[in-house]
Structure formats: structure tokens, C-alpha cells
Length: 456
Ligand SMILES: *Cc1c(COP(=O)(O)O)cnc(C)c1O
Image (cartoon, rainbow, N blue to C red; front, top):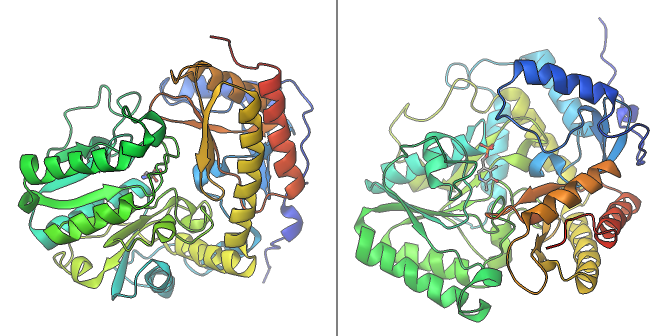
């Protein structure tokens, strides 16, 4: 019998080095093949193609090594190809790759459910169902809420992102690129204003009260509370630009829902599983959602989504009505178990807070010297800067794309966000070293200093 060597030393060297022009010849060749094989609208943020990744770096096909400030969009929170994830998944796929949980069940699915039931906020009796993606989990949270309440409507918020499937695209706020050309949309989706302090018309101090008054108007007078199955909100909006609602707003909305028998759903797909320095961003607001949806960081890069919530809600769905061929795939479950172990054993919640504090300090300092930075915000290892034309709050998406390109050329991978495309967001893996974190922030500072963004 042969044993597959799972080498912890397989992680790439934790250094930044740029050896070729960016993109290099191999990435350019791949771009050419791609152009002939993939639809034109299927685009990527970076121009380089990955060959290996781990710790705090991504190595491209030409051997250039980049500092990773994106974690594959908040997925590889425990690091890319994280040693425990690789080991557990390898062990799992050698035993069996798939039986379909609906056909022949297996233990790892139950273990993931037990973990999520214990870790999500609240001491009430909980149940968990597993899916493949964030969108699929959100769709199923709506199905559970509808089955439990017997009501049709779903309330979402401005700037929300809940996915790209038909229902979740209908729940997502932003037209370009998510909705345009893809209608008609799913019915019974309503949108309330999100208190976005930086852009609230009458000023940040009024945001929570005025947004809440609009929500009351929408639910009580327009839709009718007795028609609302659930309200879904991201505790900190992800694609919307890391918008943190004013303290207390989420609790107020949750109480409002409870009084009306509306299921309160926290979309923690981007914020959950340690990203903000707690297992769930809801914890920062002492929020106990009826349902919590997770995905992204849950399984270290393997596709897995989950709905965790009150037993009486989850038990209300008809027998056999929920599930899927691959939902809760054993390899993805094995990866999730390794993620839970890694966060606990390596103290990654604390690490997220440390990384967040360093990013916040450094970015606030950059902001003091550059009027193009309208706001620095976020929580834990989830921090963003919103760029505007100096002296105004008029969005400057060109500044963001200029900086993203500058950073890529200098060995730092970053991501954009925001309804206006003018937010640069940072989601480093929690395994990034202090040195690489500082070096990455240094590249960003240099990008600002060199004016690597067009002037107004
Ligand atoms: C990414 C994301 C989703 C959708 O998840 P997919 O796995 O891409 O389907 C839903 N909600 C939030 C908050 C997300 O960030």
C-alpha cells in the first residue's frame, strides 16, 4: 500500500517577489486560451493565474509571489491549502468521495452541524442543514422561513448582496453587474434602506432612526407584516462595501421582527467563521438571529454552505423538501471540521482582531494624508477604504481600479467592492505573517503616495 505524502512544507515561501512583468508570459498565454474558451463576460479581478498559494501568499504561473489581501473573497480564512484542511480532505476522499447524504448518510455532515449548532449565537435548540454555496444556503433559508410562517414576502436592504441565483439575484441590490439583462426577477422581494452612515443624506447621526422608520413603513403599511416570511441582512455588508450599520440597529430590527413573527436571518456568508474576530459578526451586536447562513470561510476553499437556526423553524420544512445531490459533500465537511480545529488551535479569532487593528491603524494614517480616502471602516480582518473625489463624497471608482492595478504590479492582491465600485476591501488570510501584512500595507501607502489613481 502506498501512502500519499501530505507535506506541511508544501506551503510556498512566505515572501513577495516579482520576477516578470505583470502579467508574465505564462499568464498571458493562459489569458489567450481563456479568451477562446470562456464567455467574454466572465472576468477576473487579477491578470495573473495561480499556481500555488498558502500562508499569506499566492504564487502565479510565472513564479511571481504576491501578498494575499483577498483570501479568494473571504474564503481561505485559515490560509490557502491549509495543512489540516489538506490532511482531512485527503483522508476523506481516500475513504469515500460521495454517497449523497440523502441516499446513504455519513458522520462528517453531522459533525459540522453539531459545531455550527454550538457556535452560532443563542442557547436555544438548533438544527443545521448543509448546501454547496452561499446562494444556495440563502435560497434555502427563505424556503425554511416560508414553510415555517406560511408567508411569501422577503425583506432585504439597499446595498445587499445575497448571491447570483434567480432568487438571490432578486434579493441583491446592485444592478450592474448582478441584475442587468437577467430579469424578470423573483416576486415578493422588498427592499428597505440600509443605514449607511457615510452616505446618509441627513448625516450619520440620523441614519439608524430614519432607516428604521422606513422599515416600519415598508413592513407595516406597505407589505403588511402578516405577509412577511423573513428579513435578511448582512451584519456587515460585504459586496456592498463593508458597511457597518450604527450600533444597536441590528438588535432593533431583530426585535421588530420578533414582535411580528418575521424570521430574522443573518447572512454571515462573508462575515462568519472568524473573519471579524468573533465566530460570527452578530456577536459584536449581541444579536441572536433566528437563522444564520454561512458559506465562504466555512470550509477553507471547499464548496460548503449552511443554514443554522431555531429547531422549530428548521423542522417546519416538509419531509424530503430540502437537500441536493452534492449538498454537504463529505470532502467539504471534512474541510470544515479542519477549519473549526484550526481556528481554535491556532487562536485565529484573536489573530483576526490583531490583523484588523493593524490594518485600521495604518489605513487611518494613510487617510489622514490623502483626501481621496472618504472613510476607513470594517471590523476585525475585514477592512475597507472608500475613495472619493477630494473635498466631496462623490465616488471615485477609477481611483480604486488604478490602485488595484498598482498593487498587482507591485505584488499585492486586493479586491474591490461597493455599490459605486469605489471601495477597496482587504480580507487577508488570518495566517498572514506580521511582516507580509506590513509589507502589503506599505505597497498600498506607496500607491497612494505615487498617485496611482487618476486625479479628479
Ligand atoms: C458571497 C456571498 C453570497 C453568495 O455566496 P456564493 O457562494 O457566491 O453563492 C451571499 N451572501 C454574502 C454576504 C456573500 O458575501
